[in-house]
Amino acid sequence: MTDLFLPLKDETRRLLKRLPGIIDRTFPLPVRFRANLPRDVSELSGLLTSSRENRGASYLGKPALLSAYLRYFLPWNIYRLCRLLDGLPLDLKSSDVINDIGTGPLTLAASLWICRPALRNIPLEFRCVDRTAAVMEAGKKLFRALTANDGKSPNENPQSCPWIIKTIRGELKRGGTLSVELKGKPAALSAAVNIYNELFWNFSPHDLESLEHFANNHARLLSSLTESTGSVLIVEPGIPRSGEFISLIRSGFIRESRVPLSPCTHCEICPLPGGRISDGGKEKWCHFAFDTENAPEELHKLSAAAGLPKERAVLSFILAGPVSKENQSSQAAKIGPPPFRSAKSGPLKIRIISDSFPIQDSIKKTSQKEKGTGKILHAPLSWGRYGCSKKGLVLVKGSREKIDASPSGSLEELALMDGETDGKSGALVAKK
Image (cartoon, rainbow, N blue to C red; front, side, top):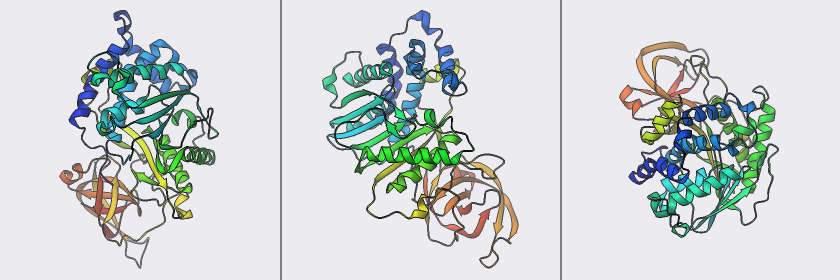
């Protein structure tokens, strides 16, 4: 278990820098249409967020929207995935199969090629499933250009890549099924990237029961498509609703005896089920943010022109591992806040999940004999970040220099401060 979002390798930065040029060569855009590109990007952004009800099922089949997706959303999605995938424990070997559900323009395959160069000479089979044939065909064309001669020229040479790409027209159903059968052996990795938000978006925010049922059905489906020694990866936009879904499907995977490998440090109750914690009215959900300074300059320029500048990228995700032979605790599969746990312990693994923020310490000092009756003590201003642990939510505090050295996704091993909780969130407290 390591820190997430490690600095990009030189090789990864090099290919990311070339990506906009590869896209332009592969999908030439006439000059007369290029002026409208920022407008098309802005329109597509609306269809993906605030105006979801106005888009059709195959909206990416429209040439202008597909062009906007390929030039803006695809490279940003690849950038996010490259930052994530490089730090995940993906144990892929020769002849393994990867299921990519809701593949779009083969985003996962392109990202793995860019950020995991050790896999490039290993024969792998990708089963890429999407409901829109045009977007998959665009993805195949781009992947050939990316892998041919290291993306340096438009010459396409499929022999340069040992990966087998199979595109399958089909879709994920809300009830927890696929519209097509995936033939062949179970996958070593099943992935669903940026697809579930399209399915759970219309659930009422007050109908937790339906969303939980939905999550359990899809945890069962993805687990059934994956070999018992394999893993399942889900990545979604880093918004509160996605965080809630990730928490629920995490519990579904635990019910399938697949323990979370990342970002979780444990398989206990999720301390961040998407509910509210009193922190200035802000919601707390499991998501991670990281900088975009290594994203291609052309991509930043297009983002600014479309009125969608990105200084940070945000995502929520879960990587569920092999089926455990040990029966998981039924308590671990429940949804709800973790029970009170004594802070007494040795060093505790804590996954940092938030940005840093200044805090005027309001620490509730509670003796074990007088739980709930302690006095509120105030201390000088310090800095903090929230983290997740098997004992629940933890406020990691310290000097600004120390807290800045532990960005979102970092893994810390710290001792809890005995008898102290954060006066605002109720989190246990650790000092760095």
